[in-house]
Length: 74
Image (cartoon, rainbow, N blue to C red; front, side, top):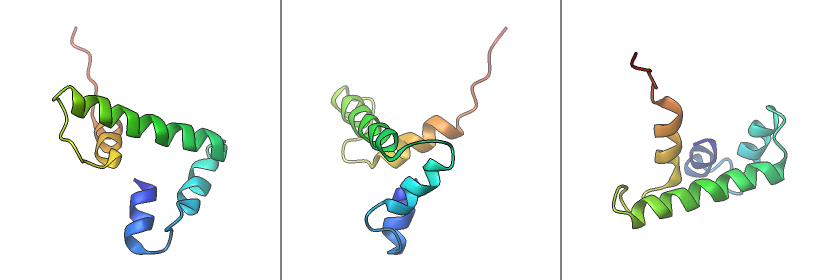
C-alpha cells in the first residue's frame, strides 16, 4: 500500500520510499522485493482460480490480509 500511495502521489515513482519504510522493521530491500513478488503471484493465483477479480492491484489483497480480524470460534 505504501508503494501505491507513493506512485499515485508522484513522490515515490520508483518505490524507494516504500522500501525504506519497510526497512525500519529490519526488512532488507531484497526481502521487500520478495514480499512484493509473493503478493503479485498470490493475486494471480487467486484470479486464476476465480476467487479474486483479475487485474486488481496486489494492494487490495494486502489490505484484506492485514485489516481482517481473525476471531477464533470456541
